[in-house]
Image 1 (cartoon, rainbow over the protein chains, first blue to last red):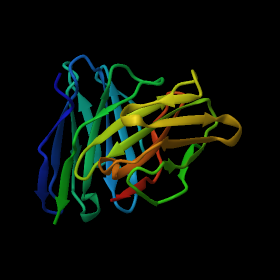
Image 2: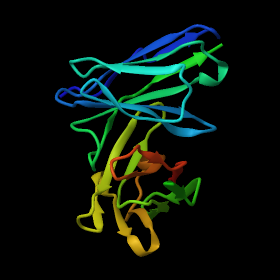
Image 3: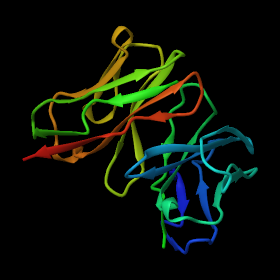
Length: 114
Length: 112
């Protein structure tokens, strides 16, 4: 079966612009979470959605937002981009939310802000 | 607060020798613990997970990890390293259904 699909794979944006990243989970998976990966900060949790509702949120400014659609696909939006937002953004999906379910990760979207 | 410590930022082994990647955690709740691997320019792949069943957990590609509550450790091992094991390894704790907390990662190099 198809894995977690993230689009686009690479993105270059200018400071001040906004960007939307997309994540399609594995068929049947209802939970989607987002992570930011940078060399300096490592992997940091952004937020998690389940049944179109945000269940958990990490410690990121309000410029970072997300949503989940009825088909479980999710989008992440970053407004007023800063140079420090350059990172690999990873999406992960799971059958359910919470508990001990493992997550399947996509290959990520590499965002470069110039 | 929950945290994960990976004691080595870089481990180098020769092909065919054992691998040991160390992980210690702190958690206020009974946690679920995971090991993920990330190859260059790829997403993360689940190697194995501990969810309060057997303390010795077997994963994919010959990896296994042992949960030791008294030592708050969850070290990852493999009897014999292969060149394809070279990657970044992340120890992850999920305390009581809360957010995943990732360790800083250990880069494994495998020498021929």
